[in-house]
Length: 108
Image (cartoon, rainbow, N blue to C red; front, side, top):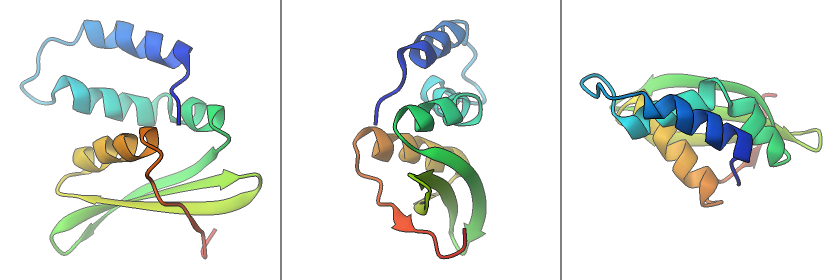
């Protein structure tokens, strides 16, 4: 998966201004902004239509569920981590490395 140049430039320009990392660090903020502001652009550039995201607490960790459509076929991916922010960071790591496993969505 690739990040469109326009998204990369705009995000980089916005993040240059981020200097207060007491609450959230640079890389976590980048991941959140990319998902919540540019998510649809990034996914669509790679042949996917983002149709939903949700977070759910499961016993001792968070579960991020990502729903997409590829050529009209509903797919779902799952990511777990200790925090919701860590889920988002892991999502981008897996996507950019083409390592996120997509399964057919049984509940589209």
